[in-house]
Image: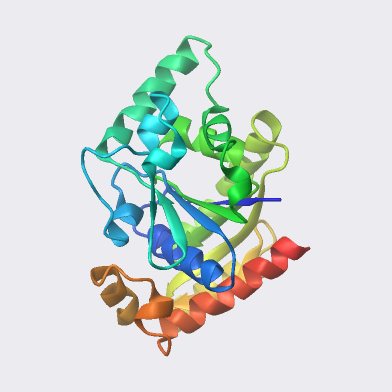
Amino acid sequence: MTTKIAITNEKGGCGKTTTAVNVAAILAEHGQRVLLVDADYQSYATTYYGLYQPDARSLYHVLFAGTAPMEAISVTDYGVDVLRASAALKQAEDQLTIMHLSHDPYTHLLRDALAPIEDQYDTILVDCPPQSYRLLEVIQSYVDYLIVPMIPDEFALHSLRIKAENLMQARRTLNPRLQIMGGLIVMQEANATKRAYSEALQGQTVVPFFHTTIRKNITLSRAINAHEPINTYDRRSNGNLDYQALVEEIMGRIAK
């Protein structure tokens, strides 16, 4: 059975794409067949792998123009297939809002679009946009789990209860299977303030958190510039060690 995971947080700049790209590549390294769906019109995951083509078929065309998924999927050298994004996806929110106001069902769009190819993959990861309410509904209707990257700060603590309430609403109205696999602390630094926030996040009981944290690491930024996942760019880096540990934890939670 295919496991479907969305990497999501309404706050931008918190490592969603870095997490999605590297988790996908390390899962593939473990022998999994992985599809990474880039659902952000900014196309960061697509660009990370050097696949951005402004006029190419993309997720937008799969959702709204009847394009077959394989026409919008690129194969990478790292064992990951990428369902590309493009700037056209910026129109998705308006089109979904029109469908909502017209009482035209729309939350099934991603599920129906990927159904013909789903059994070709062990894991499907979705790199979510930061703020696209209707598109996030479509994604949450499809996936089984959410992973929520967070920078350890006051905003992250403040948002925990809101995230839990949003999950409960999504389970009631969209997808009763949906659950938070874990909050993920990213950009961790070795100072007292960050340590205190991290301990508070991992010690609370509102939202489950991974034990693994992702340390702030310049090599992760260099890997982005090289368009290469961290497990092949620098296996000895803290970035790779941290994401390897995260993937082990993810696979353990899926197995349960």
